Amino acid sequence: MRKIIILGLTVLSLNTYCQSTVKNKAMKTLYDFKTKTIGGKEFDLSSLKGKKVMIVNTASKCGFTPQYKDLEELYKSYGGDKFIIIGFPANNFANQEPGSNSDIQNFCSLNYGVTFPMMSKISVKGDDIDPIYQWLTLKAYNGKMDSEVKWNFQKYLIDEQGNLVDVVDSKTLPGSDKILNWIKGK
Image 1: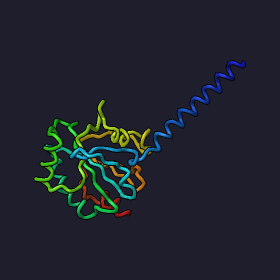
Image 2: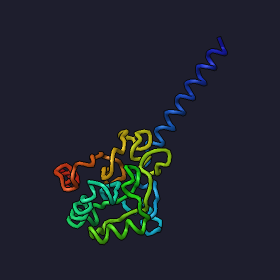
Image 3: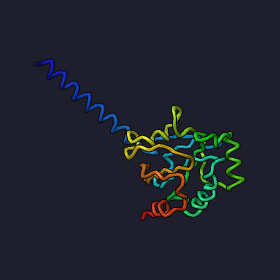
Image 4: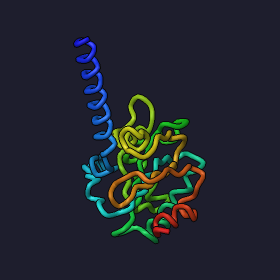
């Protein structure tokens, strides 16, 4: 009987420890991450405290690539102290971002005049998924929801405290009512 009680207490303690570990993972925010800019410099995402952030996985040879223009217009209209867009080039879908960081930077600048921050090319799904996208897509890490990056130009919305708020599909344009209302706090 004593062994059963000890085993029961051990299982209960282990269960409490596991729940506590998952809660600690869920307490992460965007501010717990660092990444590299497309130019290779370290970018500490904690520098974005107090801003709403829209993270977008981008690609230069996609049917949604013209959204760069819409993203830039949105950034020019609302970007600054309260809102920022961050682009993460990724080659996870149909080889639509095959270029180097330099190629991508030139493409964005020449074709769309992109001024919002672009980060180094990463993977947004699969075995080599970047830690930021692990956080964005797994409820165990973000505390909000599980999601899957389904295609290029999927948008993740993060609040001023660095918490994931929502995910917006690729077909939804950056200037949609849903995104504008979120930026404006409606």
